[in-house]
Image 1 (cartoon, helix red, strand yellow):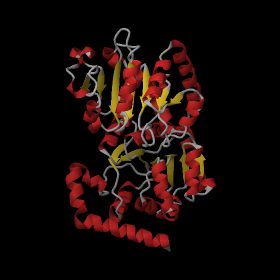
Image 2: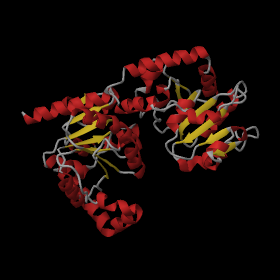
Image 3: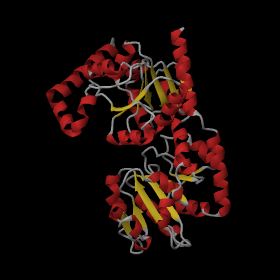
Image 4: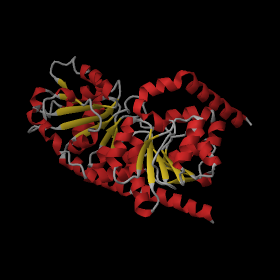
Length: 426
């Protein structure tokens, strides 16, 4: 009864928003993307598998799963995203593989109803933790099987969801199966009231995608950054409060490797000018924005010591080119960023203590594929130690062993979906 009342309230508030000016605001913001978000979706193949991935990271996870589906099923497959960058990533990774790429419908009753009528999916798979109450309840009411793939809940979201666990227990009951990454993810869903028999640990689908990308990435486009006797340090997905620590560590390690370069890739490109400003107090360092560099053939790394990337989509190839790395969102309490990407290239992933969004980092640390630091001094020391030939060889071995334990999450996920579908047809 309480859940029913809460859903009525949710629908009332959604209706009030869309009918009292909210829709006009969204139409101005999204312009040409509005129709699909209102459920007006055309030319969708019948009986398709509908995969939903909110943005870039989720699309990367979905990519390996969709490839697995297309390799083992005759069913057509579409993918929906929320953000334009997510759509761009889907175009980049899945064009020619997926049957259609659309924007996700806004979670308003009549829009969702129209979207389901237009798509008529055979099954619905949502990636990671996209929990839209209206969409999930309508799919469930129409007996359309619903699955969660690569399930995860960040520590911040978990604290919020626990406060209204009675509501989310009912929303989560719409899922036929929840395929989660690790044991830590399973425990969170159990706490929210999901029955144990509905949860399957499959590993991280994103790893399968990254393994494919690694084989296609050389990092050669960054060779112009490297100088004789110098090293290339890359700090990826940094957040406010980390740049100063990273720059201080770089200055320490640069005393030994004097011609080295540091590349900072802020998690949010709009913060790039703040990263530049962090260099200004030091007269021995010059910084430059990537967007201010001359054409590719005219670039010269002699003009700066620190390069700040203010463009999306460049970090992966930078990891391929790097000699030593740091993964951000971890020296400040932001839950951390992806620790797998640098390790794919045999680099020890140096990170801070706040990696709650990536619980398997502890296992990476234990296997010596990653290392936790707490200060600029510890970061400088970890960087310096990781540069020796012996330590680099150890890191390469550790990273290889680690990834040998992770592969195949996409296959396990699709097998779990198929088994459940077969059981439903009995």
